[in-house]
View: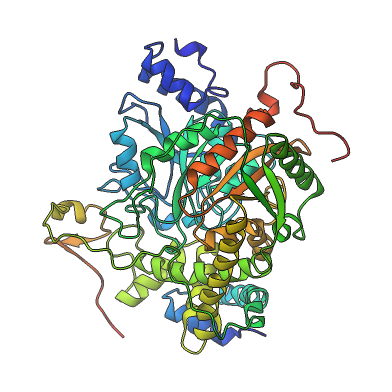
Length: 95
Length: 485
């Protein structure tokens, strides 16, 4: 097994997903198969190889610090599920 | 007269000519496409929404629904963004507007561009215009199918692992995944930021080149963009004299390539030789075996980070619950479909403590190897050629229950995407009555070369982009492949 049911539950917590028990069962099986297939990257000798994070040779793109128009507050809040007094509103933070 | 416009055949360039000569008005052209949509989109479901009144006097365009359009709902094919109306335009949408291209509508896609069949859309699948029991490919199946069905003269898609090239191949039209960094992603719903690129889909290489010239170039709002080293040239030459075309063995002999697909691609390569190209074999030894695994570590890892923004706070769905944490977790569980969840889980795992080096870190190094072997092959050759997809369009439902089988749909498009290289898919024939795509891969910023080779081949191949079932009269000569295929 590349991944256990407990690991799937742990990953779901890290990813803020409230998976149902059925989803945990299904993802455990599917992720196990996928990890098995993609785990073959372990076969290669990568000791001397540099990682690629970006396919172009762009380094530090600088822009002038010029103020420009930004979105109006009502536009920013236009799609909010809940807003109040010009702010996004969310339920109480509780552990 | 709008009545005489045959949207199935009209190219964007021809439409532009009609408008410029005053033979039709923009409103007539727009309504011809809306009529075609009314006639054929009930069966195909290419569009998630359409725009009734044209804004602009140019050739109308369809945009994949990951492209933010001010005032027009943009869902990314997801329930979590259902009802989301952007308050700003993406740079590509703005550039289309500036060029006078009115929006016809927003096209269907796999949720968050994750998939190869457009079956993962939260709003139902799109079907292939050549055979509605089959998928149009994905994730940009809506854009590709719309162009093939004459529901848009051209469209924009986005391509992370093959989401422009593969649906273009399966629907029988031309699609360009541009060099990474040539087209702005500002305002485009992010999936995997080191791979995502926006690009054109159309019936001809010249249309694709024209649309590319409108959208490409540095954008101050996307720091990953670069200035084009040379202006876009619309291809004219029918000759391939002096062009060196490499045939990577691994990409052309990969397991799972259908014999009919190989036969069409081989005929196209032979034709390229007749047009004067020098053809030779080359090797990309790691690209097929390790490309897909490398991609399915990097793309989900980046997706898990990009999709963290969907939290029910600023936009999109919210499922109310007692606490903030419960609200976010339930919103994400109900708002995301299976494939985004699968990739968020996979990516979170690959990035998590203890696994980062073994998975994500290794994948980034494999990416270096794949880039290097492409660079070496492109020192010997000007362009590389292979099938775009190992198979023709598969049946709706055929791969839906098996994520790995679906992931293998992109085995031939993924390697050059990892290397940041441009790829053009052009239709090169039929197998089992369905289109086969030819993938042309060029060096970084080599779009003009791809247009030249693609255009010359297109002229020689004479592929009819209109699905057979909608052609007037009988099957034109040369479209039915020999039985031996």
